Amino acid sequence: MVTHITEGVKVSVETIYQPEYSNPANDHYMFAYKISIENLTDYSVQLMRRHWYIFDSNGAHREVEGEGVVGQQPVIDPGTFHEYVSGCNLKTDMGSMKGTYEMKRLVDDEPFEVKIPEFFMVAPYKLN
Image (cartoon, rainbow, N blue to C red; front, side, top):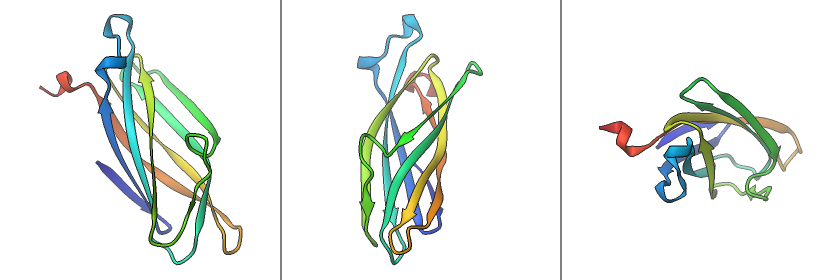
């Protein structure tokens, strides 16, 4: 698990290789990731947008951005957290992701950016 705190918002990420959805013979590797976003501040925040940078181990990269996460723009009250699970397909058995969330402080509607720490997706057989 990797974790990073930006302006009182803690982002933690865990990854899981999905062999049942992968097809290595066709260069298709599927990974799930679980993200926990914890609000350590004294005010409510809302996740407005996400921006991902995705890297395959062959040097290919792509960007994905859009509103919210998995169809939601969650409000996270002080001392609480929001968790979600999503997935990423790679063309190689190793890669990484990192990015940012655009958040908004509900007390004054001020936007701010929260770093999503870089995390690695590695098929388990590569770890031996």
